Image (cartoon, rainbow, N blue to C red):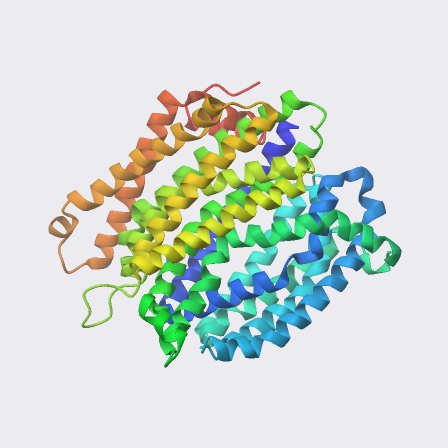
Length: 530
């Protein structure tokens, strides 16, 4: 089981890295072509769409995973038709509310964005169920390849549309393009014509009864990442208020679309590591843990190993980005003539702050996978609602205190750290994992990454690259600064892990695919696991 999960997670990480590279390319183009206000309106549209959708596939995907391989064939037909019907109804509702919301929030582009996202929802039902089939049957290679196909379609169309001058809509149309790519890819990989399976409408009521908490959990899960942006759109709209109670609220909140766009930009860059690793972990871990429900010792051991491995990868990923973001943004989006700083320089402090706290976001994948594998959907929904609601509340509180991306990042990151630590400790008690075990699985890798990132940032700050290279070569200065800072960060992290966290590295090697294991062992100067 460890080999299967390790190979699956490695494939997902490879897919994540490839997706990250494509996303950075798209981010580079979008950062050059779009304004902070464009990013803000897309954040509002995505947040509204997410909450309007309530739950993709009506929770059927999570139900199929929890029920396992033995029940898939029986549930796939009625589950697909129930999910498709649900998605069609929700997409119609989303399309209907798009125009009124666009007028209410004073965002003309909001309506067409929501219409495009609504069109993608029913189409994605096929890929949603078929990709779940790959997970249930532990076919993670097919799943990773299909995810890559969708990512290529999404990010490639984003770049193309941005270069063609589609503006903010170059963030919306790729949602539909990526969904079509994933749907076609999933069908050709599985050959499963879901629409030919019997619908059995008489079973839909029972399916809804089993998935209602999963649907609520889906909304709460969405709030963990997008909840703040739903309210930020309403807050920035207050600036247009002319009279009445809204005018008083407008005086209390002075947040602009520009600052909201900076915060979303920083959040989106940082989340590429944390959220993708957490999401990919849940995809792989949930079906594996579901097979260990009758073996509590193995379940507890698997959860602890997952925590150690993911914190190791997530910490250096998030903090490594924070380490190089200042020279990197200056390199990718240099100041235009007559300006001293680049367009996205105000987002740099927020990226660094979120990078410090976002490794804890990865632990969400472990705790949520365990609860779903055990079928504790109600508890999973309630705890996720607490986390999502708290993140939204504290981000808005930060915007009230000081309407800047930096302040919002401090409040959002602080809540993320406190809530994740407390709830992870509390959830792990159900499999008899103590507080000390959780702390030993998480804090060492996080603190090591903090030290490594601080060392890398110190190099960028104290080494006089401008004096050494010369002020007439700003691009070369930025490239050297990124390379030196990043290399120092990785080197310090590797040295501390090799000397102080050897067990963590050995566990990573133990689940590494056989073809990669010898190379990884030699790089870490460790014996290859038998």
